[in-house]
Image 1 (cartoon, one colour):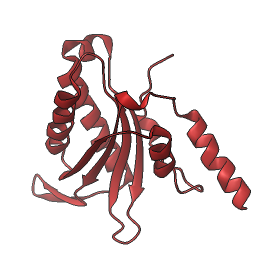
Image 2: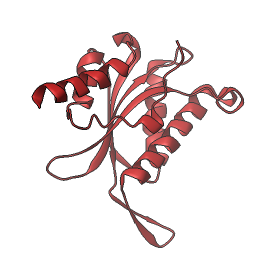
Image 3: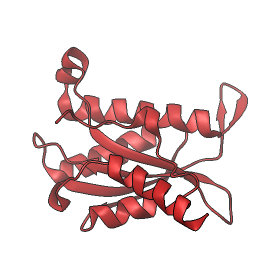
Image 4: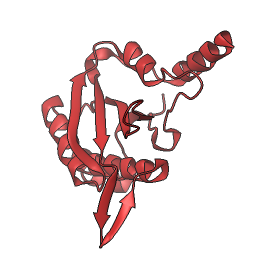
Length: 160
């Protein structure tokens, strides 16, 4: 059983691109678990979390690429992993995000912070670090071998 779990984890890692460490950010995005929208409480679930991240990706892409995002469908490159904290059971995202060459990394980090706070479920706790070990962080993101938790719907990788 252990070997099969390791094979599943390795298969998930093999699908990820091999980015240079200097251009990648390791990001942790926390989410509010309940939100009041139009006098109605919305409880966060996996579907709402995925939709919230999709909105975030569109916001960041719009700020970064301006009209090219709309006209040419250019978007940020991101590998998201939706996870649930073991003790509190709170949903949150870990993501590897490639810094686009058209923007300064510090400005891009600011776009990430601003855009996450504009989403419905975006919480204030955002951790953005330069990914010095992309493979290590990817292993951390897929640490549950039975369910690597990669959000395949919001995965954006440029064609090679």
